[in-house]
Length: 542
Image 1 (tube, rainbow, N blue to C red):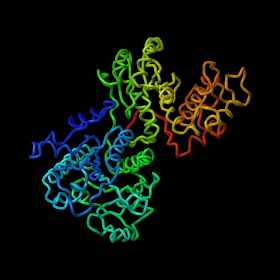
Image 2 (cartoon, rainbow, N blue to C red):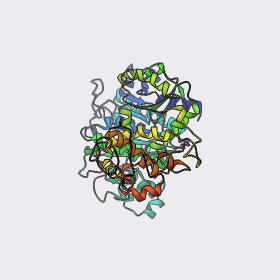
Image 3 (cartoon, one colour):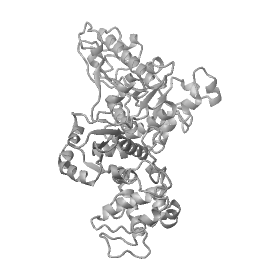
Image 4 (spheres, helix red, strand yellow):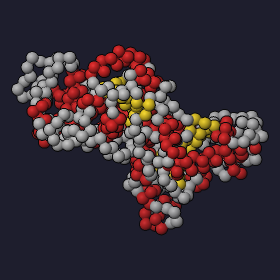
């Protein structure tokens, strides 16, 4: 990665900051001073993805005449959708798409039309139009550079058609969409797989619970109203740059629905982009803790930080950078287990980020005791979910990464304790730490009964018998989640481990867990939870 791209990447890693600039600051003043540039907003990105929302503006400047021909109404909430999508995509990839939006109403200028129809002679409208498309071209150029010569523009609109579906516009006519795949492939610059195949954006939208046309489920509009892509889709493409128009129904755009619809759309877009474009690999290298921002509260005790999908890992000077990087890789592997550059469950990571999740790495317990006195300040700065991992218990070359006797790499345990909070919160009926969840029901079977407190003696049939009396029921559930998942992944299966843990946990191999604890195995393997199914080994390649 060259320095220009790296500088862009580094800016996204500053927690809580977004680079927001007016394109007008880059252009010479016009006859309208700064008025025209003020209507175009650009957010810098570091993904090979550009989001455009040209019809969401509300401002109607008096010095710009109203258009009298064409569509004059705005697409409600599309600007908000674009910005929220950018946030959701950044959570899922660690990177941010470029965003180009406008605040000017469509009655003044239609940015998805050629300039004659778009401005209809209005001088301010023409200048806003020029600036908007220059912004898209500049963002697309940067995106192409990041993507190694391949990037995508998604132009976001809203439709009012009867069908409650997302209309995916590839600039292919309705009549051509009605043809079979062979005939579609024979047309110039068309590809049936890209348009409606298993790897199409229509397919990923369908997988995320939307109706989309075209897609493998709905091949073409079949005579129903449909927008196939406008001026932006046709203009901003070529030489590695691809473009798609997304026409969203009102059900997707409504404020009350977007908490559900935007994350699902982000999942679909990330899945599509990861299949067709290059998502940059997140950096696991540590750097000094900044002097500004909420992260600066850690500077009193910690010297370096590494970010993993926005979650910070902070280490003291006594902890080696090698061990910090190993911890970062384990965290990345837990969150992006298939290592495709996109987190496996965006809702889990969103919860962790919103609650200020963090991992601290002192060298040993004595150092942690001193740090603990500052946790009040850390919480008041917004960091609410913390977990510690000692440098002296972190073993990048130890078991289970190597099938030899030795000290267990505690990174597998402590980092899972941090991220499992996300699954417990997002799926409380399944992984909640209170009695009655599926996880706790399985734990009660493993303990031989429901014990709110540690019993004097566990029943003979129990295979989970944790005996730390400072650990309440919720704590027991968190420990059980760790033991069962890491066992299923082979994390407890190496010479001598069974004897080390038998006083607490009797299942040291995946085979023994499958035999004894069928309830938890069935729960952990349910695909809808996107739990890691491959044991982290500290060599993340996402």
